[in-house]
Image (tube, rainbow, N blue to C red; front, side):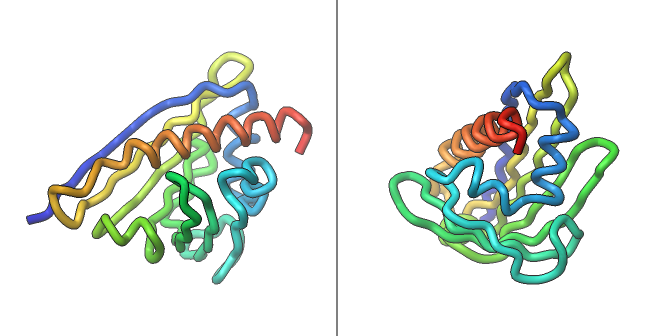
Length: 152
């Protein structure tokens, strides 16, 4: 029996939505520069940065452990500052049959609101919901904001 879940959360940042999205879309490898305590590396394994179908490999530190992940870019909507990923390999798939996440940067005043959506299917009912991963991603968004404000 599959257990489908969806988590969503917003975080306000000072950087413009277009700048935040541009970093995630075309300069994703800068995430490790912006949030080095959480993300040690982000490497392109196949395709081109920001292109649908490209495969990204992550080394990150979450819940007190070094972890890895491999994602494919599923969708990019430049007009709406949106990018979607599907996890295809790595530590998340030890507990989840599927795991997808979408990040949308929405302009708000001088800054923006970053909206995270995580949709996943648990392998079984005893697997915890991924609230800590959502908080992890919100914290990375704040780190990216600081990085962008410094002119990077």
